Image (cartoon, rainbow, N blue to C red; front, side):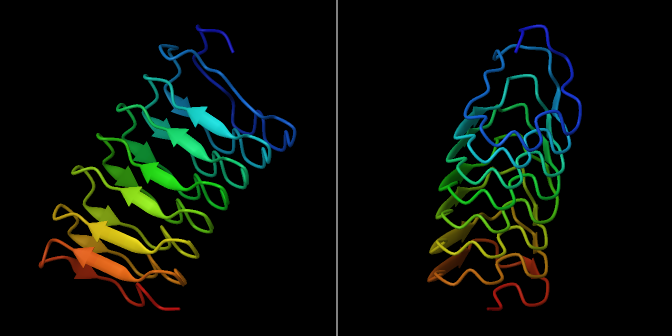
Length: 178
């Protein structure tokens, strides 16, 4: 992809099941990984978010079942619903340091996810964020989190330890229900 790219249209690579890698130059003027751009790219293994990207669109990487590593740039402030839903090989996620907005179901069904690192800029864990993350064993909720919405960790069957550092955190219903 050229270093001058400013836009990748929604659904551009959707369903490219043999696509294994995509290289977007780090300093390309691209500001958003748009809706469903890489959805159903079942062979995509890693992705590095370019430095000017501020948004990861809805279902941008949904069903990228072999995506094992996503490297965020610090410029990402928003991740929309289902962005990484059913990325079965994703194991560790270090959310971007300037992330302020997460929508629902971002990591829903990420079967191999076992470690998540939250930045201090996040205050709400939305509904279904980690729903059906079977390998998630331990989670530390930083003191900057003031609310965990309904079903955020529902069906996380391996979850053995939850540490919530803010005693004022508000809880939605059935957060940990199996």
